[in-house]
Amino acid sequence: MDIYRFFHPHHNPRLHSTPLRQQELSELEQAASELRKALERAKARTSRATKGPILPSHFTDIIKAMIFVEQSLQTLCDAHEGDTIQDLQDLINERASFGGWETWVELVRQQIVVNGRERNSNGTS
Image (cartoon, rainbow, N blue to C red; front, top):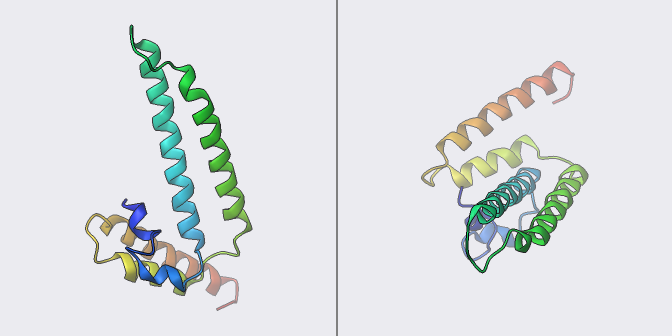
């Protein structure tokens, strides 16, 4: 995922006028989680190294900070009112033409179908 492209106004002018979607917050949370895991692996690699100026302890505070970022993003996700089907459809339209997003587009389309069925079975539209 090229997350930067979808959060920087230079690459994505719609950011000037579109509110942040829950899906986007979730993607940022996932990116933070993946970065934390990569840092944990880097810390483990440095603990196996025999020499070097970078020690495992150098990663400790960074990893703590990433945990804080993950938890903060989760709090924002929980506070978000949720995305409408139109919000998700707009995201699909924005990303469908970019290479590497085919699987993501299909998963979100399936999510829209499931959300639509749930709303219909609950008597709401």
